[in-house]
Image 1 (cartoon, rainbow, N blue to C red):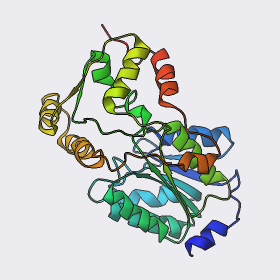
Image 2: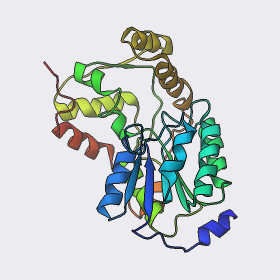
Image 3: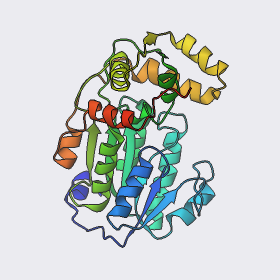
Image 4: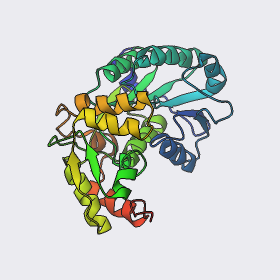
Amino acid sequence: MTNSDMTNDTRNINNGDLTLVLGGTGKTGRRVAAKLAAKGVPVRIGSRSADPAFTWEDRSSWAAVLEGVAQVYVCYVPDLAVPGSRDDIEAFTAAAVAAGVRRLVLLSGRGEEEALACEEVVKAAGLEWTIVRASWFFQNFDESFMVEPLVAGEVALPAGDVREPFVDAEDIADIAVAALTEDGHAGQLYEVTGGRMLTFAQAVQEIAEATGREIPYIQITPEEYAAGAHAQGVPEEYVEFVTYLFTTVLDGRNAYQTDGVRRALGREPRDFSDFVRDAAATGVWNPTA
Protein backbone atom coordinates (compact mmCIF):
# COMPACT_ATOMS: atom_id res chain seq x y z
CA MET A 1 0.00 0.00 0.00
CA THR A 2 1.45 3.38 -1.01
CA ASN A 3 1.26 6.49 1.11
CA SER A 4 -1.26 8.00 -1.28
CA ASP A 5 -3.39 4.86 -1.04
CA MET A 6 -3.48 5.19 2.71
CA THR A 7 -4.27 8.89 2.59
CA ASN A 8 -7.29 8.23 0.39
CA ASP A 9 -8.50 5.16 2.28
CA THR A 10 -11.96 5.87 3.68
CA ARG A 11 -12.59 2.70 5.64
CA ASN A 12 -14.27 3.59 8.91
CA ILE A 13 -13.01 2.58 12.30
CA ASN A 14 -16.12 1.72 14.31
CA ASN A 15 -16.60 2.39 17.99
CA GLY A 16 -16.92 -1.34 18.51
CA ASP A 17 -13.36 -2.00 17.33
CA LEU A 18 -10.80 -2.67 20.05
CA THR A 19 -7.95 -0.18 20.37
CA LEU A 20 -4.65 -1.12 21.99
CA VAL A 21 -2.84 1.73 23.76
CA LEU A 22 0.81 0.92 24.37
CA GLY A 23 2.28 2.96 27.20
CA GLY A 24 -1.29 3.29 28.39
CA THR A 25 -0.30 4.41 31.89
CA GLY A 26 2.17 7.10 30.75
CA LYS A 27 1.88 10.81 29.98
CA THR A 28 0.23 10.50 26.59
CA GLY A 29 -1.04 6.93 26.75
CA ARG A 30 -3.34 7.36 29.71
CA ARG A 31 -4.78 10.48 28.12
CA VAL A 32 -5.36 8.67 24.85
CA ALA A 33 -7.03 5.78 26.68
CA ALA A 34 -9.29 8.09 28.67
CA LYS A 35 -10.35 10.10 25.63
CA LEU A 36 -11.10 6.94 23.64
CA ALA A 37 -13.15 5.53 26.50
CA ALA A 38 -15.10 8.80 26.70
CA LYS A 39 -15.99 8.32 23.02
CA GLY A 40 -17.25 4.80 23.73
CA VAL A 41 -14.28 3.06 22.08
CA PRO A 42 -13.25 -0.21 23.75
CA VAL A 43 -9.65 0.12 24.96
CA ARG A 44 -6.98 -2.38 25.94
CA ILE A 45 -4.07 -1.01 27.94
CA GLY A 46 -0.63 -2.26 26.94
CA SER A 47 1.59 -2.23 30.03
CA ARG A 48 3.43 -4.51 32.44
CA SER A 49 0.61 -4.30 34.97
CA ALA A 50 -2.23 -4.95 32.52
CA ASP A 51 -3.95 -8.26 31.84
CA PRO A 52 -2.78 -9.52 29.42
CA ALA A 53 0.58 -7.95 30.22
CA PHE A 54 2.73 -6.28 27.58
CA THR A 55 6.46 -5.62 27.61
CA TRP A 56 8.77 -4.68 24.79
CA GLU A 57 11.38 -7.10 26.15
CA ASP A 58 9.13 -10.17 25.95
CA ARG A 59 7.89 -10.51 22.39
CA SER A 60 5.98 -13.66 23.33
CA SER A 61 3.56 -11.37 25.19
CA TRP A 62 2.55 -9.51 22.04
CA ALA A 63 0.17 -12.03 20.44
CA ALA A 64 -2.27 -12.04 23.35
CA VAL A 65 -2.30 -8.26 23.55
CA LEU A 66 -2.93 -7.89 19.81
CA GLU A 67 -5.77 -10.40 19.65
CA GLY A 68 -8.95 -8.73 18.38
CA VAL A 69 -7.29 -5.33 18.00
CA ALA A 70 -8.18 -3.09 15.04
CA GLN A 71 -5.99 -0.08 15.81
CA VAL A 72 -2.97 0.69 17.99
CA TYR A 73 -1.41 3.73 19.63
CA VAL A 74 2.32 3.12 20.04
CA CYS A 75 4.27 5.00 22.68
CA TYR A 76 7.64 3.28 22.95
CA VAL A 77 9.10 3.16 26.45
CA PRO A 78 11.43 4.68 27.42
CA ASP A 79 11.85 6.49 24.09
CA LEU A 80 12.45 5.80 20.41
CA ALA A 81 15.88 7.39 20.84
CA VAL A 82 17.26 4.43 22.78
CA PRO A 83 19.24 1.62 21.11
CA GLY A 84 17.12 -1.29 19.93
CA SER A 85 13.97 0.71 19.35
CA ARG A 86 13.98 0.22 15.57
CA ASP A 87 14.18 -3.57 15.87
CA ASP A 88 11.33 -3.58 18.37
CA ILE A 89 9.13 -1.33 16.23
CA GLU A 90 9.82 -3.44 13.14
CA ALA A 91 8.95 -6.66 14.95
CA PHE A 92 5.85 -5.18 16.57
CA THR A 93 4.43 -3.68 13.38
CA ALA A 94 4.91 -7.01 11.62
CA ALA A 95 3.08 -8.75 14.46
CA ALA A 96 0.33 -6.14 14.33
CA VAL A 97 -0.22 -6.60 10.59
CA ALA A 98 -0.28 -10.37 11.02
CA ALA A 99 -2.88 -9.99 13.78
CA GLY A 100 -5.16 -7.93 11.54
CA VAL A 101 -4.47 -4.43 12.87
CA ARG A 102 -5.62 -1.87 10.30
CA ARG A 103 -4.51 1.44 11.77
CA LEU A 104 -1.46 2.49 13.80
CA VAL A 105 -0.50 5.82 15.36
CA LEU A 106 3.15 6.22 16.37
CA LEU A 107 4.36 8.81 18.88
CA SER A 108 7.75 9.98 17.67
CA GLY A 109 10.28 12.59 18.76
CA ARG A 110 11.65 15.65 17.01
CA GLY A 111 15.32 15.71 16.12
CA GLU A 112 16.01 12.07 17.03
CA GLU A 113 17.69 10.03 14.29
CA GLU A 114 16.58 6.77 15.88
CA ALA A 115 12.98 7.98 15.93
CA LEU A 116 13.15 8.87 12.25
CA ALA A 117 14.29 5.33 11.47
CA CYS A 118 11.29 3.97 13.40
CA GLU A 119 8.97 6.25 11.45
CA GLU A 120 10.21 4.75 8.19
CA VAL A 121 9.54 1.25 9.52
CA VAL A 122 5.95 2.16 10.32
CA LYS A 123 5.43 3.81 6.92
CA ALA A 124 6.55 0.61 5.19
CA ALA A 125 4.53 -1.78 7.37
CA GLY A 126 1.48 -2.07 5.12
CA LEU A 127 -1.23 -0.56 7.32
CA GLU A 128 -2.85 2.85 7.78
CA TRP A 129 -0.32 4.93 9.68
CA THR A 130 -0.21 8.31 11.31
CA ILE A 131 2.92 9.71 12.96
CA VAL A 132 2.82 12.33 15.72
CA ARG A 133 6.34 13.79 15.99
CA ALA A 134 6.38 15.77 19.21
CA SER A 135 8.54 18.36 20.91
CA TRP A 136 9.28 18.41 24.66
CA PHE A 137 6.10 17.89 26.73
CA PHE A 138 4.67 20.49 29.11
CA GLN A 139 4.06 17.58 31.45
CA ASN A 140 7.77 16.95 31.98
CA PHE A 141 7.49 19.88 34.38
CA ASP A 142 4.68 18.48 36.55
CA GLU A 143 4.69 14.70 36.01
CA SER A 144 8.34 13.80 35.62
CA PHE A 145 11.88 14.48 36.79
CA MET A 146 11.38 18.27 36.80
CA VAL A 147 8.91 18.17 39.69
CA GLU A 148 11.42 17.55 42.50
CA PRO A 149 13.75 20.48 41.75
CA LEU A 150 10.81 22.80 41.19
CA VAL A 151 9.38 21.85 44.58
CA ALA A 152 12.82 22.20 46.18
CA GLY A 153 13.12 25.71 44.74
CA GLU A 154 16.13 25.43 42.43
CA VAL A 155 16.44 23.98 38.94
CA ALA A 156 19.86 23.07 37.57
CA LEU A 157 20.01 21.69 34.03
CA PRO A 158 22.55 21.46 31.19
CA ALA A 159 20.42 23.71 28.96
CA GLY A 160 21.30 27.27 28.07
CA ASP A 161 19.64 29.77 25.76
CA VAL A 162 18.26 27.25 23.27
CA ARG A 163 14.53 27.72 22.89
CA GLU A 164 12.08 24.82 22.74
CA PRO A 165 8.44 24.97 21.51
CA PHE A 166 7.08 22.89 24.39
CA VAL A 167 3.84 21.03 23.59
CA ASP A 168 0.92 19.82 25.68
CA ALA A 169 0.39 16.07 26.05
CA GLU A 170 -3.34 16.81 25.87
CA ASP A 171 -2.89 18.13 22.33
CA ILE A 172 -0.90 15.03 21.42
CA ALA A 173 -3.63 12.79 22.83
CA ASP A 174 -6.34 14.68 20.95
CA ILE A 175 -4.47 14.15 17.68
CA ALA A 176 -3.90 10.47 18.40
CA VAL A 177 -7.57 9.91 19.19
CA ALA A 178 -8.63 11.70 16.02
CA ALA A 179 -6.21 9.62 13.95
CA LEU A 180 -7.42 6.40 15.56
CA THR A 181 -11.13 7.06 15.21
CA GLU A 182 -11.62 9.38 12.23
CA ASP A 183 -10.88 9.27 8.51
CA GLY A 184 -8.51 11.70 6.87
CA HIS A 185 -5.41 11.18 9.02
CA ALA A 186 -3.94 8.07 7.43
CA GLY A 187 -0.56 8.67 5.80
CA GLN A 188 -0.09 11.93 7.69
CA LEU A 189 2.97 13.09 9.61
CA TYR A 190 2.00 15.67 12.21
CA GLU A 191 5.02 17.43 13.67
CA VAL A 192 3.57 19.10 16.74
CA THR A 193 4.81 22.01 18.82
CA GLY A 194 3.32 24.55 21.15
CA GLY A 195 2.54 28.11 20.21
CA ARG A 196 5.57 29.73 21.86
CA MET A 197 9.33 29.26 22.01
CA LEU A 198 10.81 29.24 25.52
CA THR A 199 14.17 28.54 27.08
CA PHE A 200 14.15 26.31 30.14
CA ALA A 201 15.00 29.35 32.25
CA GLN A 202 11.95 31.18 30.90
CA ALA A 203 9.72 28.15 31.51
CA VAL A 204 10.94 27.89 35.11
CA GLN A 205 10.37 31.63 35.57
CA GLU A 206 6.75 31.28 34.45
CA ILE A 207 6.26 28.49 36.96
CA ALA A 208 7.88 30.56 39.69
CA GLU A 209 5.57 33.50 38.99
CA ALA A 210 2.48 31.26 38.97
CA THR A 211 3.42 29.79 42.36
CA GLY A 212 4.51 33.09 43.90
CA ARG A 213 7.96 31.71 44.68
CA GLU A 214 11.57 32.36 43.81
CA ILE A 215 12.88 29.40 41.79
CA PRO A 216 16.30 30.19 40.35
CA TYR A 217 17.46 28.44 37.21
CA ILE A 218 21.12 27.42 37.07
CA GLN A 219 22.86 26.25 33.92
CA ILE A 220 25.31 23.43 34.60
CA THR A 221 27.46 21.17 32.45
CA PRO A 222 26.27 17.74 31.31
CA GLU A 223 28.97 16.21 33.50
CA GLU A 224 27.70 18.08 36.56
CA TYR A 225 24.15 17.01 35.79
CA ALA A 226 25.13 13.35 35.43
CA ALA A 227 27.15 13.42 38.65
CA GLY A 228 24.25 14.94 40.58
CA ALA A 229 21.79 12.41 39.17
CA HIS A 230 24.08 9.53 40.07
CA ALA A 231 24.43 10.88 43.59
CA GLN A 232 20.64 10.80 43.92
CA GLY A 233 20.52 7.16 42.83
CA VAL A 234 19.06 7.72 39.38
CA PRO A 235 19.62 4.61 37.20
CA GLU A 236 22.53 4.86 34.78
CA GLU A 237 20.45 4.22 31.66
CA TYR A 238 18.07 7.05 32.58
CA VAL A 239 20.93 9.44 33.26
CA GLU A 240 22.43 8.60 29.87
CA PHE A 241 19.10 9.13 28.12
CA VAL A 242 18.37 12.51 29.71
CA THR A 243 21.95 13.64 29.09
CA TYR A 244 21.52 12.65 25.44
CA LEU A 245 18.37 14.75 25.20
CA PHE A 246 20.04 17.84 26.63
CA THR A 247 23.30 17.54 24.72
CA THR A 248 21.99 16.33 21.36
CA VAL A 249 18.27 16.80 20.82
CA LEU A 250 18.17 20.15 22.64
CA ASP A 251 21.08 21.65 20.71
CA GLY A 252 18.93 24.08 18.74
CA ARG A 253 17.84 21.71 15.97
CA ASN A 254 14.23 21.92 17.16
CA ALA A 255 14.13 25.67 17.76
CA TYR A 256 11.26 26.32 15.37
CA GLN A 257 7.49 25.96 15.44
CA THR A 258 5.23 23.87 13.23
CA ASP A 259 1.54 23.78 12.34
CA GLY A 260 0.92 20.13 13.20
CA VAL A 261 -1.71 20.75 15.87
CA ARG A 262 -3.57 23.14 13.61
CA ARG A 263 -3.46 20.77 10.64
CA ALA A 264 -4.66 17.81 12.67
CA LEU A 265 -7.27 19.46 14.88
CA GLY A 266 -8.19 22.74 13.20
CA ARG A 267 -7.27 24.78 16.28
CA GLU A 268 -4.26 26.38 17.90
CA PRO A 269 -2.13 24.43 20.41
CA ARG A 270 -2.59 25.03 24.11
CA ASP A 271 -0.37 27.76 25.50
CA PHE A 272 2.27 27.02 28.12
CA SER A 273 0.92 29.71 30.44
CA ASP A 274 -2.49 28.01 30.53
CA PHE A 275 -0.82 24.74 31.46
CA VAL A 276 1.24 26.43 34.18
CA ARG A 277 -1.83 28.14 35.65
CA ASP A 278 -3.80 24.89 35.84
CA ALA A 279 -0.89 22.81 37.16
CA ALA A 280 -0.03 25.42 39.81
CA ALA A 281 -3.63 25.32 41.02
CA THR A 282 -3.21 21.63 41.89
CA GLY A 283 -0.33 22.42 44.26
CA VAL A 284 2.05 20.07 42.46
CA TRP A 285 4.93 22.56 42.78
CA ASN A 286 4.25 23.62 46.37
CA PRO A 287 7.03 23.00 48.94
CA THR A 288 6.40 19.83 50.91
CA ALA A 289 7.68 21.21 54.20
